[in-house]
Image (cartoon, rainbow, N blue to C red; front, side):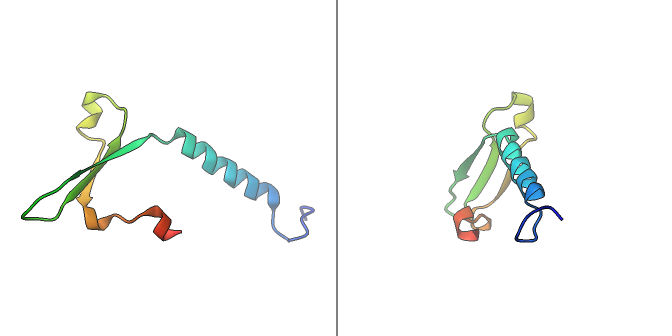
Length: 75
């Protein structure tokens, strides 16, 4: 047993939280750009805020604006 009165392994939970926090620190800052169209769905492109010009050509994702949701709505 791990000494926890709840029966859960508190140490592994702390390790998972630390790993998530480290991932958030290591994750690149992203920016989004929305292009609005009159005759088709608006498009949103997400890319790293800081990357080389060469990486800008391949390090991005675009989708129709309606495909994105606010993270607060999913919590």
